[in-house]
Length: 260
Picture 1: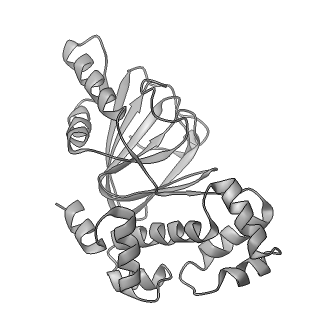
Picture 2 (picture 1 turned 180 degrees about the vertical axis):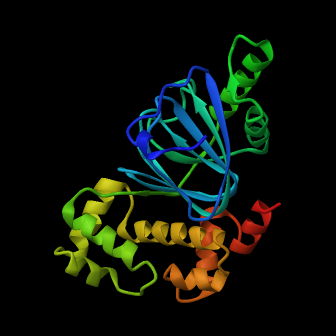
């Protein structure tokens, strides 16, 4: 199953309670903007995906998933080779997950359930075995934990100019004061706008941007030192400390574990 540009506005409604998609993507592949009538859990068993909506961007490392509510226009870009496993779920089947995108941890049990479900293209409640599988997966998804890998987009034009500058210059050491000044506002004003519109301080937003950039680079095969420099860190040790704080392990161990 592939997404064509004819489907940029809406994909057809699927008949089953749960429909699965298994796909192997080449590095750099892009799925253009589209939306589904169903809720969607997009799981990366290998590689890193970047999901973008009008509200922001979510980087999805291996063994994580992004939750995309029904009718949310989104595009997906692959960093490195990606093994994608997707569940399309009848809207609001999983009642506890938010009506906004988020990245979630996927437990070992839920991983196995997703992989097992993907052996079937469709799951329906008419089959007793499939009904139990659907209920078991929903129970597991009701308890998943969201993780902070979102980069929300501000809306104020001054904050947008700062966000765009930071994205263009993610590897530069330009001070935040200089970037805000070029955008036509004081750093204090921009700080207030980012906090109000994204829920993050300007410094935290920049850190999230750098983490996302580093995950994309590492998934594409870049060395830790190069990823650190490109993400804007002056030393690999500072980058590794940030990575450990965000994901609980070092970059080398993280990507070794995800390649098993």
